[in-house]
Image (cartoon, rainbow, N blue to C red):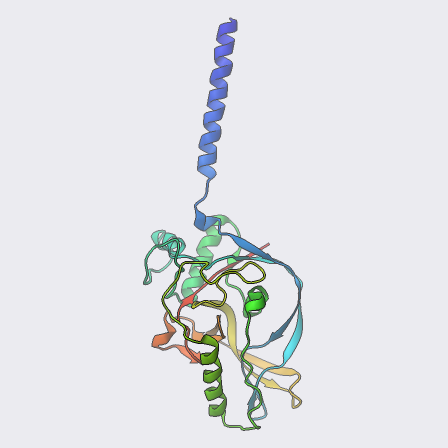
Length: 271
């Protein structure tokens, strides 16, 4: 009897161990469902609204305003990769685009609408809330690598072409000798918060709409603005404004300024 009891105990332990191994194998998730993230805390930050703003008929920069974000979130440490995006395409949820399926290269040639579809798919897969960041959130997690183009007051010249020319020059200087060829994720290093490739050759979609606004005569207060959401802000070495269905702004679709080298994205996760 003791022999049979002993065999039964060993057999039961073996079954339990096998079940545990099978369960662990079952719950092991692919990398695209467990992206590495960086925690971004709530707090104060300076922010300048984006778009075109005027004092009467004169174009000016929007004033810098002091903001306080009362919520935390997590942001992907790296851009969404080709392999991650390909999984969404294979699931017949995302639309195919150019590029391969490498886990080491970022997915580019994606529109704002493509990025939104991927965010919805990842949210369904993980039962979590994943979404594109706003421009304000991007500024928060860009950290020490955020550089803003300030055009200033061009001698009170109401001619908008003067500001457009200056914008192109400022953005071209910020880009330097840029090369659109993709490098492996992480190649451009991390900022002070641990987020990688902020100032590489990939501009990131945000949900922020292009704005037309009015500024007080002293230039210190934003009086009002209107959103035009057919165009969204993409962030990188400088802000760009891109029509939402465009995948490659170099061929057209960049509303203002120098077009991005590449259009990609990373998502934030609500906590």
